[in-house]
Amino acid sequence: MPRSRINQISLASALALAVSIPLGAASASESPITIKLLTSDVVVEADGTYVNTEHWEILARNGAAAQQAAQQVKQYSESMGDLDVIEAYTLKADGTRIPVDQSAIFTQLPQGSANANAAITDLKQKLIVFPNVAAGDVVAFTIKKHINHPFFAKYFYDNDFFPRTISIEEARGSIVVPKSMPLNIESHDMTFTKEETDSATSYRWTYAAPDALTEDNSQVSTYDRSPRFFVSSFKDYDEFARAYQSLAAPLIDVTPKIQTLADSITAGVSDRRQQAQKIYEWVSGHIRFVYLELGRGSVVPHSAEAVLANGYGDCKDHSVIFAALLKAKGIDSQIVLINLDNAYTLSEVPTLAQLNHAITWLPEFDLYADTTAGVAPFGVLLFQEYGKPVVHAVSTGKAVRRTPVLPSGATSVSQTTAMKIDLAGRVTGETKTVATGPYSITLRNLGLQILAYGVENAAASQLKALGAPGGTGTFELASPSDLGPEYAVLGRFDIAPEPELLSGTAFGMMSGLRLINTTGDLLLGPLWNYRLGADDPTPCYAGHTKEDISLELPAGKHLVKLPADSKIADDHVQFAAHWSLEGRTVSVRRDFTVTVDQPLCEGDIRKTAVKALSAIRDSYNAQISVVDD
Image 1 (spheres, rainbow, N blue to C red):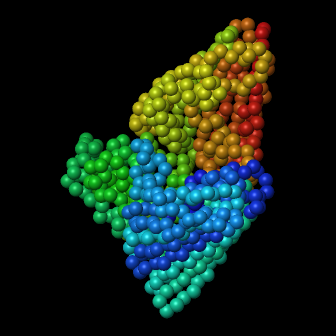
Image 2 (cartoon, rainbow, N blue to C red):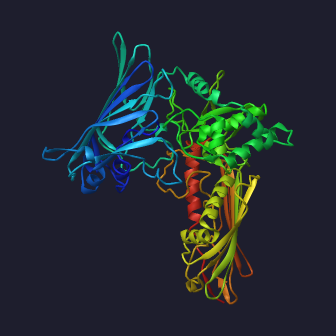
Image 3 (cartoon, one colour):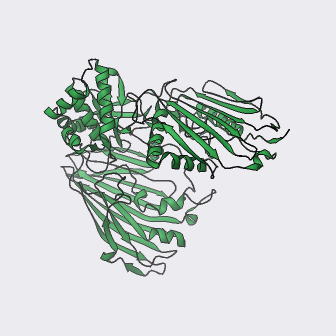
């Protein structure tokens, strides 16, 4: 259950309001939403089924908060059980209690689920609409969630985190399990106690944080740093992995249809690695990925043949059909559970908290593969899948491992823009973007968006986003499904005349139809997030980016002067911005290389990154001006 209970109080209420306050010191009295009381009591049976009763009292301190708090949403998995609203009411500031009528409690699909492009999900939600809510009022409700079909029979686990941006006056809970089901406990910045009777064990937790932060600007998961707890009846991740493998293994069945398909895909190919690549590319291109996060809905994949018949599947379905096709050719594989977001730790207590995605490990070739990426070359992962702790679904051996960090030279992007400006101030030109490694996945996904939106519409939209609202253009690109080692997109553009560009007005060098992040961004951490400090760890990656921009001036015009060059060089980052003038063409090259061997920039590397990123931002403030000869 990766989502925090706190984050579920409303998709647009407490969390959204808490982080929108201007920077500055915060206290409970200043927070627009305060959780006066949250209780959560869980009673677990020996078969792993359980009932969770929650009670909420949420204070809205101003009119905007009252409007948001007046609608509360609680989600549940229909395949696992159901959810009942026991009571709900508005408690007015004068003590008047106004019950919520049953007709104001709605069962519905989560927001966006009706969209054809949304995730396929078994999630449902109860929407509670509270009457007559004003500033100073409290909305209160009690719900009971019945989990009749747990992920793993005869096991129980739970986890939660508490965002520091939410004011919480009192939160407490209990978990009661049979004496035969001892729990392993891990908690951070909150209290846990244990009580035993002859037949049951009770674990109780408490938490309070009335003074909420005004902003949480961290780049790593709340499961890596927030007040949190994990409980599990699994002894360790090895036991957890064996339980998962026992569910998945029977579904990786080589039926006649699977065997025929595997033989067809690999026809004429005898090299085993090439066979694996052919199968990988077939699954990537033919099984549509639909998102269903691990930890919600059924944790059990569909059978390989069912996935084949459907033509779509979530991450674990992808792993199953990929494994079955590989198995048909005698190639071993393992399903691997990983975090697809920004969590870089794994709790010592086994849960699915940080594990929300499934990929595949091919031991024969010593590589991880993710067919759900759709447009990733064989053996290339998404940026956020490198350097992560993972759990291999194995029946024997060690389950917890780690994906490799992104090695030097494995990813790059080059963006070359050549422009001309005429005497009317009209700018025309083209930008070519070439990417390898994870950057090629990014560029291919952009290619898919370009094709879906239309090459001319996409060009005009991108030019507008880059500050040229009157621009037109088009893109030329190969199929994003071409999974070669590099991928390229060419953009041509025509920007409406801006005569002031030739009148001595200072302006920054235009970037044409740039598609990938500004040179200097991402690899060493976010370039344009000014508020991150030296103590804020950020994901970082080894890689190289380069940008060449040239602007040819019209006859009769000249550049006033070239901006100064800038250069940064140390063991982890090399950045250079070099300006040049040849005839009437002014050019700038920005070259950026990061060399790191760890997934997070923290400690001394983060301190170096802060200084480097600040200097790189300064280099982008350089401006040029053009005047008459």
